[in-house]
Length: 355
Image (tube, rainbow, N blue to C red; front, side):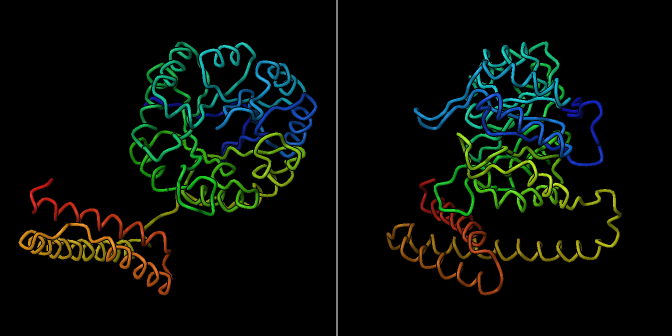
């Protein structure tokens, strides 16, 4: 995708990350306009509001639909802001474009469905409008890339993605686990693709928006898409993760933007040390796998099952506790050990002739 174009509009400051902000849902005309004027006063240039709200379960507020398009048109007339909304069907695309919406995004549930993505891509063919694709709800990088490629194949060149985190069955500080390694790998695979962070959906709580936004900036993300509401505690959807326009402005003012062009000569020695340690890690892992192979041979000779569940659980708990004692993250260590264990099982299964 070497032909992608920047997602910028005339009059915008290109030296700061692009911030898209507005309420989770367009609820009433008064709420939409009041929030927009507050955001415009704080220097926000792109206003987001959900018109169609796909909910996890039926019965919740599912958006005002096309009724909200004239409200967004008023936002543009009265504030000069550009507008953005989510689309999930070809009908949404047609209505939003006819209503003059300037930027479209595609939600996580839609991005996970190739049929829906192709329908939206077909509706966008021949149109010049910026499109952002959220990551699918599951941590599936190939599915995310496939969704982006469908939109790119339709001729969209002002194209980017939104990292909003991934659903996890494990209890976590976050509503959606960030799994930063996945957008990092996406950037490696598609280096010209702009990446925006959605700290509202990752955190699920307004107090997490600031630290998550800073993490995204530290990782070199291109911008943020944040849920801001004139009266967040009265919001009709996702009120716990929305902030006021004034709070958003405070967060943005305090973001530390790293200088990407600073020379890295002073890092040469440190990187050499990292390379040496990585070499040692690889050698240690290879030695561990050779021992796993010996264990597999022993189990084969004595008709023992490959998986020893009790020992595995004890090992996970013990090593995770040790990791905390030496200043490492418990969940990180569990993830590393689980990956090592899976490879050990694969090696033993191969020896037993069951792979």
